[in-house]
View 1: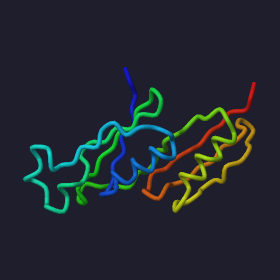
View 2 (view 1 turned 180 degrees about the vertical axis):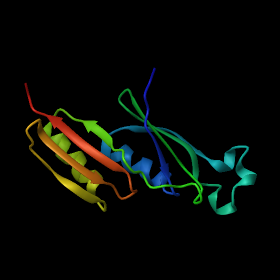
View 3 (view 1 turned 90 degrees about the horizontal axis):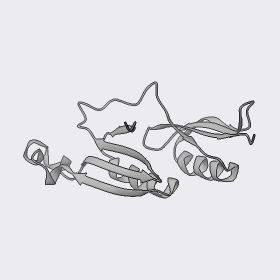
Length: 136
């Protein structure tokens, strides 16, 4: 079994996944617009180039997402995408990149369990937690 987060966007999926590809050092392997699917004729013309399915690979981990029509979109609540990062400098780099044009809810800092831990909502409305555990 593979557990894979799937993110919904209100029209910014392509931009978000290109941003995550840069921030996380991953590779976008799928970016499928509605226009090339059987749903194309059911979508308003301004939505045909929006994304029905995107896949980002970061190492052996998968993140998926899509654009959902405005009447179906809901802001993420009660969840975060958590990144476990071993190197404090890399944790800081990724945190700062994801925080750009977003909102930091807890600055990246040392805690009783982590060398670095912080929380933010990125510019696309996705909540993230960055956790860099202390060395043993």
